Length: 55
Ligand SMILES: [Zn+2]
Image: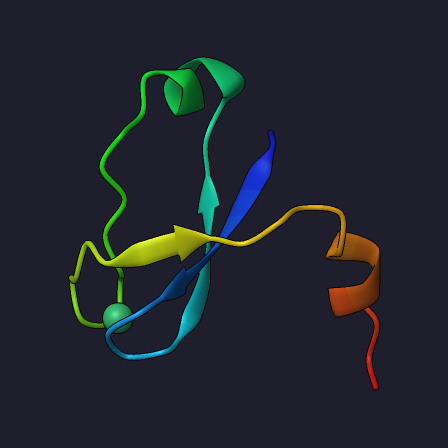
């Protein structure tokens, strides 16, 4: 299942949402799991390999 990375503009935390493509295309309202704000911004994908690596 695809994962979508989001960053919350209110609390600054990042989180990952699991959505099927079908669900994503339905443009669901994503809210921050930390502060429940809907001021979230989707991060660009393509960094999953980089972010999963331990530094
Ligand atoms: Zn937040």
